[in-house]
Image (cartoon, rainbow, N blue to C red; front, side, top):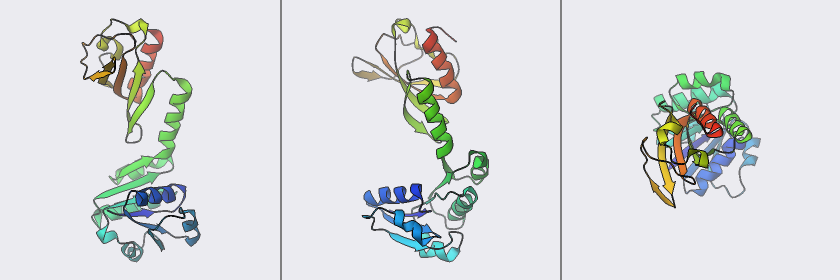
Length: 220
């Protein structure tokens, strides 16, 4: 597949090399030629020096044949405009924009493009690791708005139903229950046993309530 990476900073250079290693054709665009020095020495994709807002630069990068474009500079406004242009003018089927400043997330969201907010997601992940190790994140969707967590059922919840643990809120839904190495799709009526491994899909609000139940051994 043909991909364009706009911005050759730490994120862009790493992304470009990862895509190249996966066998894709990659073009990296940056306004500063010195930025291309960040690329891995084994990178064999193309580089295009120029302003990404220029149609000529984007067309030199092959945007008319691109299968995807990632705008990952450290300027949120530039990422939003380039991503929007790729999506609406050139009909690039898969476009992703990086968000650097969390306060500017609504601006990128307004353009209707996929967005990755490394700052927001990273802060949330560090908070989780600092505050509670009883729940481990195994999958994160979007920018961490919905995540899948894994936890081991303790004695305080042995013999109790899953609905007691998760509560009635739709913010926390069961994904899988593994017992003696065998996984199954649980229902809210499923009975828990000590040592079960439970996976749940939940929002930040839902995981906060679940943490409280697990730590107290009682319904919150």
